[in-house]
Image 1 (cartoon, rainbow, N blue to C red):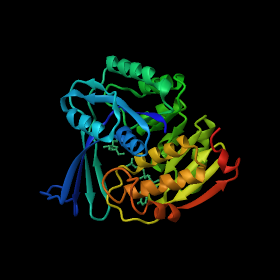
Image 2: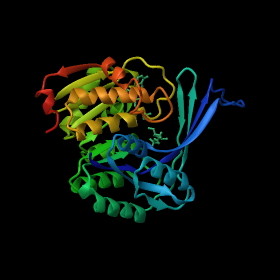
Image 3: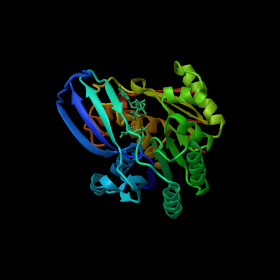
Image 4: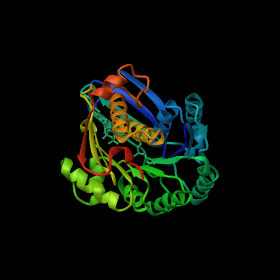
Length: 321
Ligand SMILES: Nc1ncnc2c1ncn2[C@@H]1O[C@H](COP(=O)(O)OP(=O)(O)OP(=O)(O)O)[C@@H](O)[C@H]1O
Ligand SMILES: O=P(O)(O)OC[C@@]1(O)O[C@H](CO)[C@@H](O)[C@@H]1O
């Protein structure tokens, strides 16, 4: 198994609330609720650790409510190298309704100054040498500009470790400009990068290939219930999950990233990686939280995924260079 660094610049405590239907402006009564240490990088870390990798988590954690994270990191078995910053880590609210609709209310996060960014770079410089990959996932906290973020991604690139990036908005454009090894936009985010909506699979493939041309090797485009497209210099594939009952889509993208990175680290053929990542992320939507690698029907889900190679390239076994 490999060593991976998972960065959450803007982690969160996720307050997941399940209720029949949200009635704005009224008193709503929930069916259940729970609070979890989360944020995209931490969610990826949790899955990778469950898959047996040695994981170091870092980024910025508010010192006023760090206890829940410290307990979670100990329970997951990941190494905590978060830089502590003044104030509280944000609480993000996830409202899941009976029909599968999810409403996210994400906070801005704790303020991060340049001293803390420099401290994070020192952590990365210390640990990157032993890592097989660095995952950066999630939004930017206040105080980290897209320009500073691009500089950070480029800095990690100089540490000669592949960077897997999943972010959104201005951070996505800046992060993509730094040419990470792998990215996972969804179709809306891909459209934001392109400057025009990406509608339909052909447009997704076209936009993903343009990202490959900038030097990004693996472009995973997630398409919700329609699965994903993977574009690499070796070819383009699509993978569709079976229909599942949707409870919460919140950690599906993070599960996909972790499972795809696992396949890469294990040097699996592309089809095996796509099947695994699609099945595990489909499992993730059936409950609150990340995909469960012990789901009893995971093998069935894998066989139910429909894979297709959309363009010829080098043989699928050679999808990484
Ligand atoms: N309704 C669904 N049914 C089955 N699988 C799903 C469904 N929604 C998502 N998935 C799986 O999860 C993956 C990621 O989903 P999605 O495209 O919603 O990610 P995302 O936009 O990054 O979400 P988030 O940021 O909330 O994690 C999809 O590629 C697919 O494999
Ligand atoms: O505000 P961001 O950083 O874009 O997203 C944060 C977040 O919505 O992403 C995860 C799910 O992917 C959640 O755990 C978390 O609350």
